[in-house]
Length: 110
Image (cartoon, rainbow, N blue to C red):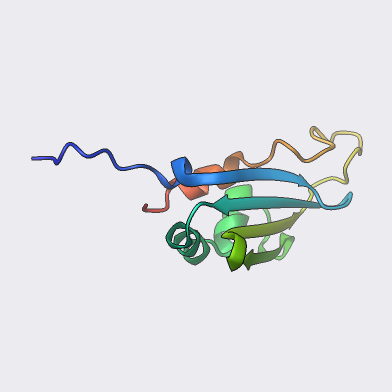
């Protein structure tokens, strides 16, 4: 028997999930959560290996995962496969790259 209470996904509680360039050779991802519990849950669940797997890049290409607890924010940086604007680069602004991260976050119990 279920309680009838709908549980929300961690994805429903993320305020900001975006990607952008951090210079021509790096993508940065911002995750901003609405409360400390969700922030802590996401921070515990993310590591360089998981991000590397999600983006199918070598571990050393995930250059950092940092956080700012006062803002419930997490920032992840990875090396771009091609420099921004290089022939063959499909997103020179780095603004449409968050889907693999969203898939990773969906798997976090929340």
